[in-house]
Figure (cartoon, one colour):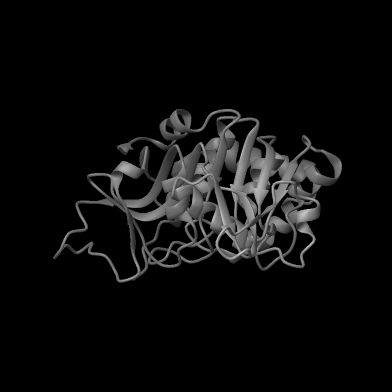
Length: 287
C-alpha cells in the first residue's frame, strides 16, 4: 500500500545498491526529480532498464551509478547521442557498462510478461535480425500447438519501478493521462514502486473536478510503495496538462555531456547542490 513520503525518504527506502531499477516514462512524464535524488544518494551497481534511455540514464551512468543497462534505443531525442553512455561503453569511464540490448517490441513484451508474473515473454520478433547473435538473453522457442518458431526473452520484474504522473488522490491512487508508455506494466511487475506526481487531490470520483479523461490510467494505491508530490518533477520532459517540453535543455545537454569535466561541473551545480524544490519553478499548470 502506498505511503506519502518525501522524495529523499522514498528513494532511500526503495532503491538499494545493486537493484534492478526501471525509471520509465515515454516522451513525457520522465521522472527526472527521482533520478536526481538517486544520484544525490550515491546509489551504486544499479541495473537500469528502460525502453528509451535518454538524458536521465546519461546522468546516472556518468555519475558512476550503473553497472548494467537493459534497453532499446539510446540517445538524446531530437538532438543526437548521449555521450556519458558512449564514454562508458567505449572507454569504461567512470566504470565499464554491461549492455543488454533489445528491440522496442521485445522490451514492451518483457514488461507485459513481468506484469503478468510470467518468467519470460514470447512473441514474433528478431526474424532476420542479427541482435540475437550477440545477445545471449534472446532465445527461440517452438510453439507446441503450431510448430512456429518464436522469440523469447526474460520478463522484466524490477526491484523498483519509478514513474512520474499528474495526480495522486489522498488514498494514494495515481492518475496518468496523455501518452502512456510502459509505466503501468513496469509498476505491476516490480517488487517496489515509486510514483512522483505533480499534485495531490482529494479524489478522482464521479462529479469530482479531478475526474478522469477517457485515456487515463489509474494505478491503485496497492500497486505502489511510495507516492511523492514533486511539482515539476518531470522537467525538462513535459507533463501533459501542466508544462511543455524544455527543448533548450535537451539541446544544451549535447554540449554539457561531451566532456567529462564539463559534465561533472554541471552535475555538481545543478543536481548535487540542489534538491527537489528546484523543480517547482517549472510546475506551471497549463490553462
